[in-house]
Length: 376
Ligand SMILES: [Zn+2]
Image (tube, rainbow, N blue to C red; front, side, top):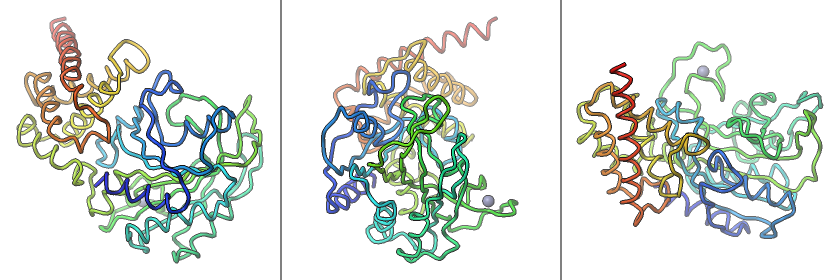
């Protein structure tokens, strides 16, 4: 499913003049202590720095790893490693045209139901001491694509003003600007006590599947500086789009991941009943193996520490209900080998033996540490 969505996304934007470019390694040097967090951000920075020539419009499908999402995988809607499509514009595009193109892809190419699509746009207001105007152009797009006015919601800076690195805590360029978010409303009713339940509400009624970022400012010394308006990025979380297209409520129930999940639930995790623990194990083992295949190694700091934390949390989850937990996690990883479609477009292939050796070594260290802790 992810492969076909990726092809459809690239073909659609290809027809709009976007040149297809390859994904970056998850260990791109722009992220010294972390991994590539979202598609398009590297191209944006390079282009604004003036050190990269290239296409005026491009499209890429990028595996992304977000360590800050690893604790949220029990929601069934998050993966720490996922695939994001990004269409980039470096020609001062009209915000309305960028948002409309993304919505038309969802409505015409993927046939998502029009009455379940919601849009949030920046309402304007004070950001870091500067008065930023509302994004009226994006807000008006609902009419062009046939949404009802109630499906377009204006939100303040907390929700609809993008700041690069705000989630990761890894500030780099200071790029920021208004952004537009696209949500899909769930089919089944959700009980919500909020007086004005709308996209962004914690109840889970709305699933964010994509956004459009308009970086028009740079945060310098706590103040916003306007930058020449040249670019926009329209991004889609393809794993979440797969959930919607296939009518699934949990990301591990999509066709890309279900085979892998089914095998591990019948095999090494068959004794487990804690759904949260299972989600943590499936997600973290998968991410660990893919990141190691990309060249990351466990260590005491930076990226290596993130890897170590993934396995520590997976061990903790497995330790509740399986024994010995490190052997369970190795069995889960071995089953992953049979499902290359679950590897987030990353080529583990010939590196599998090395990946497994590193995983086993890391788990042995963690198991002996746990044994010492229990003895103390
Ligand atoms: Zn709600």
